[in-house]
Image 1 (tube, rainbow, N blue to C red):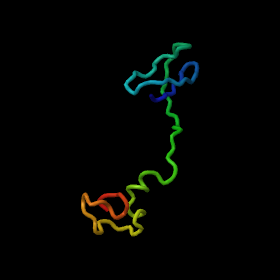
Image 2 (cartoon, helix red, strand yellow):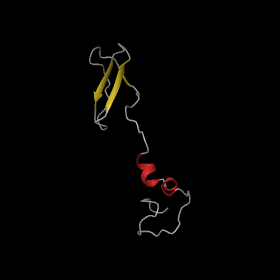
Image 3 (cartoon, rainbow, N blue to C red):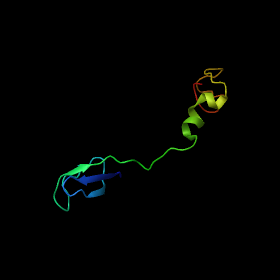
Image 4 (spheres, one colour):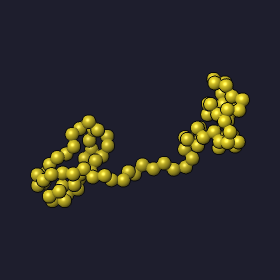
Length: 86
């Protein structure tokens, strides 16, 4: 479940809430009953390294030629190492 951050407009308290995406947003502060505002915060999720795109779908880097469609047929396997249609 995602973690959402809210800030009270009245007392400025910031709180994190685990909510399903289908749950209604928090509207009142549990401390002062003020109006809550959903904050936009940065994610701790980062993609690093080559990853699935460069390993399996980037045909130019897989075969070194940068061209596509050389001698491959659908269903026959890829000469570039797994990226069909190269």
